[in-house]
Length: 132
Image 1 (cartoon, rainbow, N blue to C red):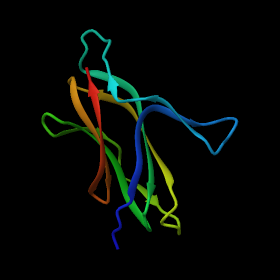
Image 2: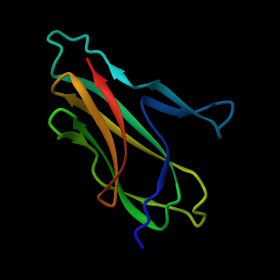
Image 3: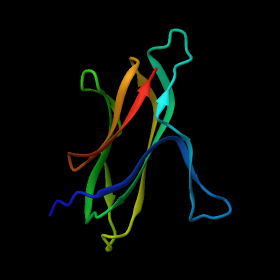
């Protein structure tokens, strides 16, 4: 049975970490919705790292997950992660976190990009990222 998980949260950030005072608490560092290039020339822009945090529920068994960044004007896939296995526990109501760390993100043009979460080759969720 190919069950697609439900995305409770999909967050783009510079990094993440656990709270030192409370290891059950997760901190998102540098929330990303827009990136303004300060380089000269501004593009192509090499962004050092993007972390995609997914909080998932409703999954069963094991599947393959991937993050892909797409330039919205053309639909071109710009970069992404290799597919990685995700294994869900026995409780489909539990919420679990999955992190994708993408280094050396090369954005060729300014404009609107989309970070897409693919699970078993099905597009499940996406978030916009505007580069100026």
